[in-house]
Amino acid sequence: MKTTRLLFALAAVHLAASTALAQAPADEAALQAKRLQEAQGFVNQASQLYLQADYEGALAALRKAEPLAEAARDPGLPGIRFNIARCLEQLERWPEALSAYQAYNKLPDEPHRKERAWEAVQALKRKVYGILSVTCFPQGAQVRVEGPAMQTLSGVCPYRNEEAAPGDYTVIVTHPGYLDARQGATVAAGLGANVEVTLERDPAAAPPVASAAVEAPVRPLSILPWVAVGVGAATAGVGVYFTTAALSDRDDAESLPPGEDRDDAVSGFESNRTLSYIMYGVGGALAAAGVTMVVLQSVGDSDEASVQVTPTPNGLLVRF
Image 1 (tube, rainbow, N blue to C red):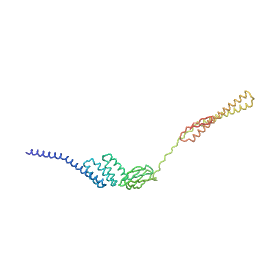
Image 2: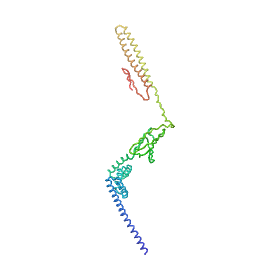
Image 3: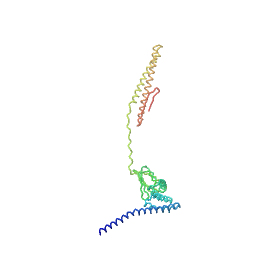
Image 4: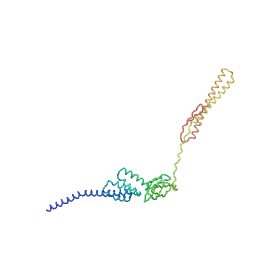
């Protein structure tokens, strides 16, 4: 008898548990459906109020719909958040509207609404934030910015923050070898604040180490120019010899009567005179080339120069 009662009791417990498990999904589905229905009711109400330009009322209705849609995992949640942001934008509550659009952007949605939200975020940033710019001398100095709500930012000069919250800032600029500088700035929404800082040298800092000048190696003068001068002088000396011989032949020609001997003297005069001219020309060209090379070596700088001096029948041709 006791065993039979126990079996009936176990069967009753099992039946009750099975009934509860079967009923739980049905109750959850009913609850979700109820939430969706309530959320849709608030959305419909918000739509009517928005068309009547009652943005406060529409916002209040959407605020009630949002948690219901989120709990019911309603696919229409992105649309609710998008319209919350639109209501805040219409009410010119710029910071709240920006936060609402950013919350909406975390959810997937239709491309046309995403594009509208992106444009709204850019426009609202210009209304909510200001721009803080810092220029320094010397450039490359370190910049630390202490702002509202104990916010601290840092960077390298030139510094620019296009999303600076409105409020008072302290700009601190440092650089090795210079005294630190502090300067205040006030940023207003939608406006820019420019800070210019010129650091002063720290008298206690060691002066910058000047790099030692490195002397260019002195190139030894080439003997080639002097050889050219010497050969030119010797060649000119040979020209003197031929000049003397030409003068002697001329004197002989003038003292001789017409005839073969006189003709030989005249021919010798002309040959020696021509050779003397050649010797003078070549000797002068060589001597001038040597002098030119000596001058160029003495005044040349560290850059190597290539000089070519070529004697010509009309003088010297100098190529650099």
